[in-house]
Length: 75
Image 1 (spheres, rainbow, N blue to C red):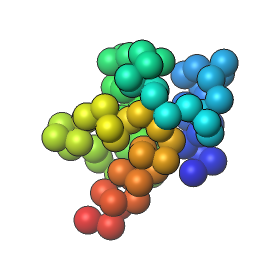
Image 2 (cartoon, rainbow, N blue to C red):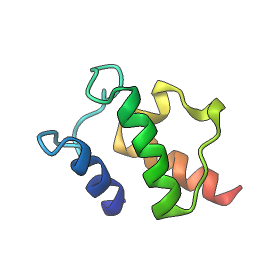
Image 3 (tube, rainbow, N blue to C red):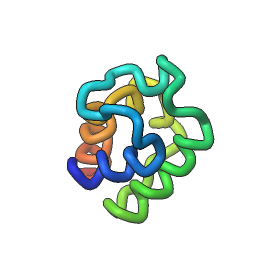
Image 4 (tube, one colour):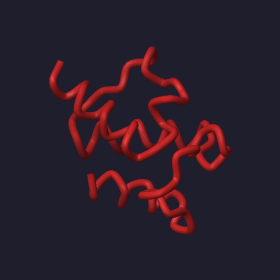
């Protein structure tokens, strides 16, 4: 999970991603950030995020993102 936090910190170093739970709802991550994040996750974790998983609930927190990565990695 630390690698995921480091990826997020590259996008927004001013945010405490360990505590923040409204990354999309709070407009911290925008659509460009999501696209960048999907590409970085694919590269670093070898996980492809399908279009149907691009919903705010999956990107609102590090925990939600990590759960998505783990779930997709198991499939």
